[in-house]
Image (tube, rainbow, N blue to C red; front, side, top):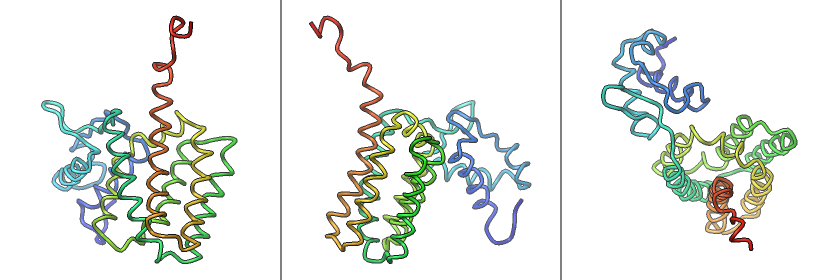
Length: 228
């Protein structure tokens, strides 16, 4: 399972984070250090280090007499995470824009075309994976490593809820791919960095707004007495 190219702690971190991102370890899943260490053929020390790192990213929490569990993002945490991700990803995308080549933008457009192709038979998990791939093309060249690290942390923090966003609000997927094209066109045309930043930020926040609006639709619906 392990190799000499990376530390055992890093390998354990990547393995655990991947299972959380793929929802193999869903919200509330208990992370048993001994069992994980045995599966990875390593001691519990690097596993503990990996879990502490995931805790710092907000993906894992420790409970007294229980141990480590995968975190479920409640609505307040979801809003805070999406607001923050919108800010830092918008900034990263704007800073990346001058460094993106026509080939990069063509690759982003190709990913978005694949997302468009699945709109009639939406697979929220695959759509989410492609969505991250699309945005990664646009923000990964960001020359500021601190901002880029915050973007990575933000995406990681959303790992437990991203699939449910498009599953809960499937209509948002149609608008999302349209906004992707707008962002690409802005970058390709050499638009002002602030305009690109705001487009990327508002794109993220519209997803948040759509999720919240759908979640509160029933509770916000008027009663019979209110209609009369």
